[in-house]
Amino acid sequence: MTKPDDIVDGAWWVVPRELGRQWSEVFRHAWNQPSIRVEAPYPNCGVRALHQFYVRHRRADPAKLAQAPQWLQEKARRYVNGADGLEWCAHCRVYNHIMDKSVPPWWPESVEGIGRGAPEYVMEAVTAHVVAHGDL
Image: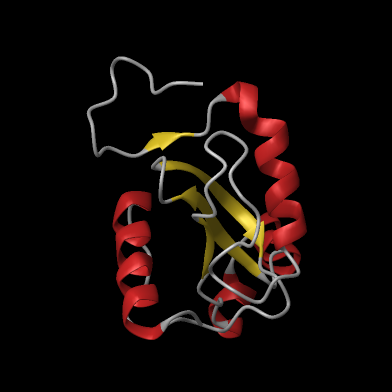
């Protein structure tokens, strides 16, 4: 697999469809690894530069939620442990952004200095965090 012609060097790009199954399998196993860094190599490049990160959804205020429509109350109950997930290869600059995903049970409530934002912003902030702190 090569980078598409319309991707500028240094830009992030979405996981190619042909590698989707392998990518999903690697991150399915990483679900139980209490680490930002994933132990497995990326199937495309063979480099161990995979990362995972979750930004938890804000918890709804129970008083405000009681006033919300029933469908929204049901959605809030289903996503008790909801988050947006990011998975990426720092070597290839390939990523997957999964919205409304569950968080692994070991994931912290938050990681200082990293919040919501565009995937590129979050991945760069996480990279800086790993350099400064090693991991979670």
